[in-house]
Image (cartoon, rainbow, N blue to C red):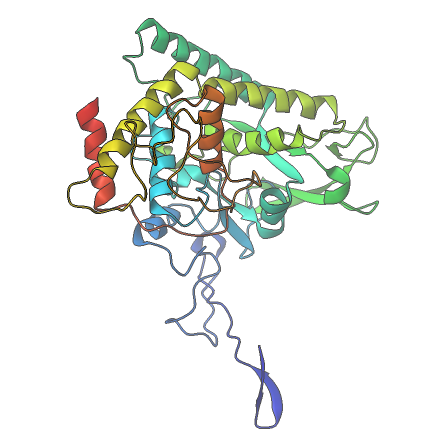
Length: 398
């Protein structure tokens, strides 16, 4: 950043534009910046699509950190589910899968407020890149969600699959969902004795902070002893429009990825954290209801077949296309792919697209991979043209 001007060390760095927040009585700061090439710190990406920017504006700048509740310009708007790379087609597939599972609204996009929360950038990095912690729903909320999903799965089965799972997102437990912070590697997160996470409570227009430390059992508590109260469950932040309320299903999908990776090399956690992990994994297992996922995958294969045989030649899939439209025909191989998908995944691996003989577990693993992208603030172009054709094909084959 340094340069020399008139014999002095200077810099070409310009301050970031500071937008006013009327709800907090904060005015804009007019300083040395260029409106042309710099963005607000509250914006996630300078390459944001118009739609994504419009969606983010639905979240008040006065909304504090999801976990600590402290507002500020240091916050980032975090995606709980994100695609694995800057690929409009993968983004489209993830959004379509979530809609077909019935766990989001039909007009959902990954940039919708129901998939976004403000988060302290240090906590965001610790959660997303380091995997030291995760956020899931509280025990009561998880149990309520499990009950709802079980009921919808039974209805789906009773109707022989001729049914779309339906959840009332404008009613509890969605509107009053509670969340919990789970420390997976507490000593790495708060490294020195006395290190603490300060969490705030809002009292009218004032904030009151309380420090939470890691206790011997690895929980985050009001003191360093195991008998001290744990960090309590918390709500999503300031009131939003009903359609913009944070979707707890998406938070749980994010958490399940972290918990699944943790269980590959587990170590003891406190009983409360272990129970939350078990309930979260159980919920996600029921979300990926096998008969429904098999039906969705069949429809997706039909769409890929039509997509690959586009008479206008919009896309060159590479290689030949087998009868399921999944890429190069390769006998009875369980897993095939027509391209290498990006490696920017929290799973740490690249999972190839499943072939026609793939097992349910392989299909789930692939779909979880698609939704495991690091939340690196990469905005996607809106799917247009060929993706609209895919949507039409999906309608045609139903």
